[in-house]
Amino acid sequence: MTVSVCGNLTESQPMITSSTGGPIPSTHEATIADQFTRQASQFAASPALHNKAALDLLVDAASPRVDEVSLDVACGPGTVVTAFAGRVRRAEGLDATEAMLAEARRLAAAAGVANVGWHRGDVYALPFVDGAFDIVSCRFAFHHLQAPAAVFAEMVRVCRPGGRIVLCDAVASDDPAKAAAFNVMERHRDPSTVEFRTLAWHLALFRDAGLPEPQARFYQVPAERERLVAMSFPASDDRAGLRAMIEASVAGDTMGVNARRDGDTVRFDYPAVVLVAQKGE
Ligand SMILES: C[S@@+](CC[C@H](N)C(=O)[O-])C[C@H]1O[C@@H](n2cnc3c(N)ncnc32)[C@H](O)[C@@H]1O
Image 1 (cartoon, rainbow, N blue to C red):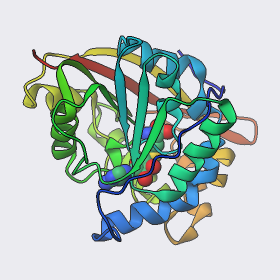
Image 2: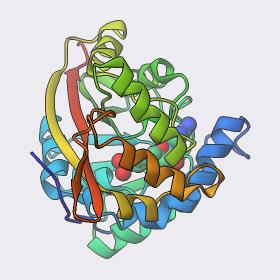
Image 3: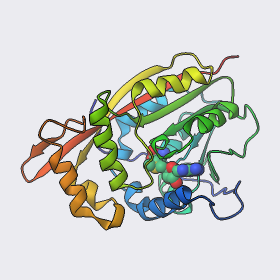
Image 4: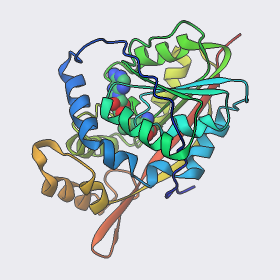
């Protein structure tokens, strides 16, 4: 399935808490804060990231029930939280970046959802007791994490026995050269990116956490060079270099993302996977 646009955001309940209580300490987290403060408004307005079919695919994968409570970690502008809000009793979101949470409150309020809550905090130390949520999800954030297994363990910890863990991210090619080229481009485009990993890596994450093999659903997030450049803040503000990397990948599809020329521009697809597994009772 190829996704395009569609916003589904509704009202928010401005409940902000902080688990960190101060500035984010590490250099990487400072880069995260810098990137996502600058990206927040563009991110919140991105059609591809609000595609209804893709959101339905993710929410459906969690098999939500109306009496349940969900948590989306690294929630950004609250897109996934608001998608869950129509299907559960309460949907919570947590993110480190205040500008993203401001977008989340704004977009959710515009859509009229009341059963949402927002938390400013760190995914490495979720400010919730064990088993607090029926569903714990994360979309498009694990490639920004330096210690993803630690965050995954936190997600599993705050999920109740019998609850569902949902992980969505773009996956790198199984061809190591293509995966490396894709990661070089993505780290240049967004220096807060650590690494896009393979599908096998994601499956191992579930296995190593003691979860059953997850169900997998796949879709494509379409990208167009100029729109992508416009919404990015590349290293050294080198937009020409970013364009050149994307351009150079067309011959031989060297990043493994189906890059192809379309008139004056280049289009490609981020291959996304939604993985879901139930935590043991
Ligand atoms: C690419 S955005 C994805 C946003 C959202 N999940 C979505 O799919 O629209 C990544 C988000 O991860 C958040 N993030 C990165 N590291 C974090 C951390 N250690 N704790 C909390 N949030 C973090 C960023 O602030 C940013 O909002």
